[in-house]
Image 1 (cartoon, each protein chain N blue to C red):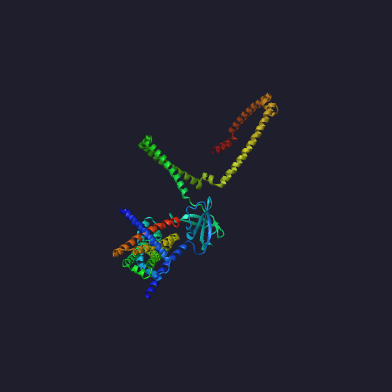
Image 2: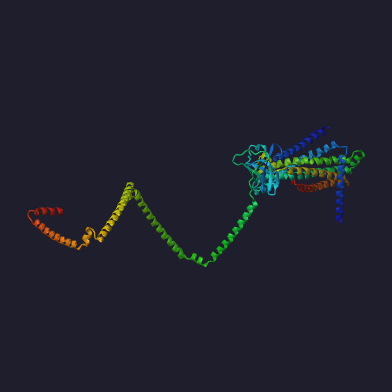
Length: 256
Length: 325
């Protein structure tokens, strides 16, 4: 019986998220546009996240290289290390790890922020004062996450590659130029473009889930914590689901 | 307000930095795929492209000079590969350059190698079709290897049967275990050794003789080595041949004469016939012989008388002394 209730709740949740997404898509086109709030959110969501994303990206590149090295040495293809690491970072590690960190930081912050605004009835107050709270709070944040995550992912890729370069040079000796040439030689548009496109969907998912959870928060301060937590969990799961769909679609289209 | 604009500047730098990296990445990949810059198209044809696909590298003397643009069917047995080549290679690749499919390393990506041929030819131009070399067919290689393996297996089986037969052969093992054979062989080898020693000695002696014959001063070396002697011998042999010929001729003449005489004798003509056949002549000859015998006896008596005569005794003694000396 519980499982039926859970399944029902899950489907209800999916339906409400779909309705929320549709509302976003409709509201997005309609004026008036909250440009200032959008840039502010871009700064907070994008620029302020760079140190965290950069650090995790750098560590990821370095660790991945160091972890791969013994196996590559065993197979006698140590010289291919930059190529392998380059493909792994650009295709998968960079976008997904960035998105997950982004979900952890931004998803939870949006969920908590909107949740607290909801429980303190600030959203209702905005509506009373004539401001469209959905446009001001949700659209600006979702657009910011959608546009900033690809930017963060690209920078994370660059920092990860630099970490990988240092990783290669811990036990070997490769010039930056050779490392770069080897990485570029191993890459094609089919590696970069699908990976870049899917980060928009990751960003959109993080934003929409964070906003949905915060916007629909209740039960007082306890609800704020739950909203923040649920935003991170659902956004993270959604990132993996989108990643799975992206690789399937890319494969079907013959760009894999 | 001031805070807002600073934040926007930071945001702008942040976004531009990311875009710069993205554009650089895409540009480098595009450049690598010969999307930018001056290129020209060359073509080649293969019966089997072995998994070659668009984007694979084109290599000339180990340098990447382009990429495969497309691979498509011409007919049921022929594929055409279109290659985008950097224009820098325009004055390098000739029309007779050989194209073949290889791999980057042992397990790497497929690539197209362009091999220069020493014979002179004009440079390849846009849309030229370069001659291709049939790639090494790994499937065929594996088939041959499989066939060889089967044959080796059969040989090994036969060999195993032979070994089993040898192992089970009592006679062979008896032969191998018999020490007397080994002793005999050992003795025989000793004898062979001795014989070879003697043969060696003989050979040395023959060698010495040969040296003597070659370099010595005796008659035989001269006979062998002296050219004048050889000439003389040749002349002597020639003379001998001439003499033999003359003797033969004389013999013929004698035969002829004898035949004539015989004929005359048989015909009753000539003095020989008279001597041999006429009885009166024979009687006369007998009488003459008797008279000669009588005369010679008388002459002998007279000579004895002369020897004992004081007039001639001295002469005969001196003659006897001279004969003794």
